[in-house]
Length: 214
Image (cartoon, rainbow, N blue to C red; front, side):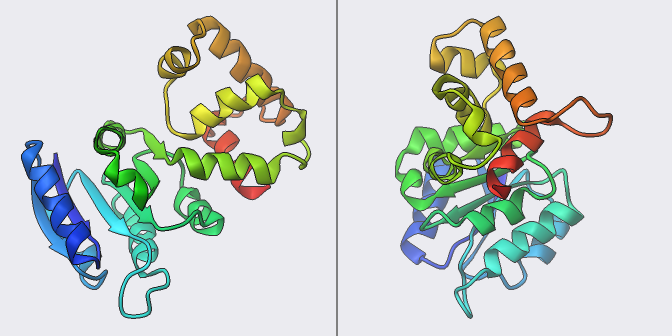
């Protein structure tokens, strides 16, 4: 795939460039800040953009704002943001436009090379890749909120896997369930979260956002 990077840590940035090139991908550009990132992405149209959330000059949310703008202007471009910590408000802003071609990973996850590459492939294919730790913390924070508290432990496991961007078939393999069982669990989850079938909306996306909003 064709990738553009934005990461202010020289060591991490160069490490990502080397990893991606060794895996046969093409790194079109690698930035140390978010300035010019959106313009470069618009001009070169990569498959995926990988960007740190906190970048110069203020080290607050420059990378996130660029990622959100890219998702709004270029919805066919995948966006994977990296964060040092779980920041729920940032995850909510990133997913506000939906959960297609988007990812939110903690930087520690980059060291898990296979997981990082798998996340990129899922995003390029049109899916999502949300860090398991992000999802776990959202589940814990939301455990006492209605209607999330209605979910059983097994239903939460299925929703957690869904929130990480896995397909029904992948959830079935991960949790050692049949595909029909996963579909039934998701149906129950949607009902408990009061997400009814409505034209123009994906209940899968709405279920993930319900965690972020709780």
